[in-house]
Image (cartoon, rainbow, N blue to C red; front, top):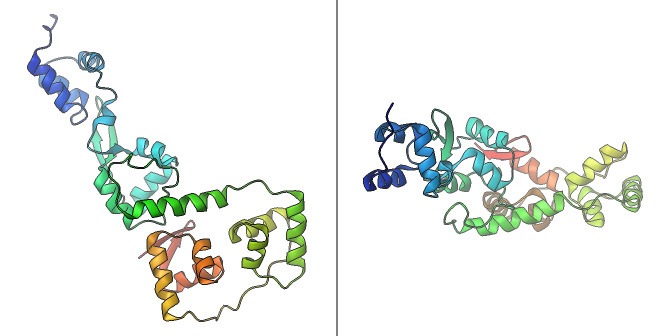
Length: 256
């Protein structure tokens, strides 16, 4: 088999234009060159990984930017209509790719699923106005969730508070500077049978409170933040949302 002549200016222009838009095999077939030759030329031209040149981002790269597990994004595709589309980028390998504008459009209606706390601003293209506020909310939630380890003194105080049988979850959480979920988990881990007292589940919400709750939910506020602003318990907030028709799966809320 003869050696293919040097690359022409037209061939180079085609390679640069189609890199990341067509599969490497497709480019090779169009130019009548081998896949290896196309890869070598792309390397010399400094075109980089062809997966980074698409109009959007691959699912695997998105998981890196969001600093979350790839499996979670695949679940978004299966369970939440995440608009990632298959695309052949290598010789025959198919990757799931999502356009930046499609990501942000989807994320706006799935704020309780998406965590922007560790996403670098504008790394996924121009961000919508709501993303800044959501990022700050997620950062505060993340900091509370992954706070310092429990100390022996905190464990003693937790035992004392719940054994008093007169403090509810919000009060205990505030005293220890933890989330209600963290309090519940620590009681379980320590094998403590006593529980904070429950607030009256039949306390009614005013129309203004309901509207505020819905507004905060759609902005991506976490349960603890909503509870603080409304003077309710985080567990009660979740229960209220469920009674209003919001469905939750694996601790994530989806309005159906």
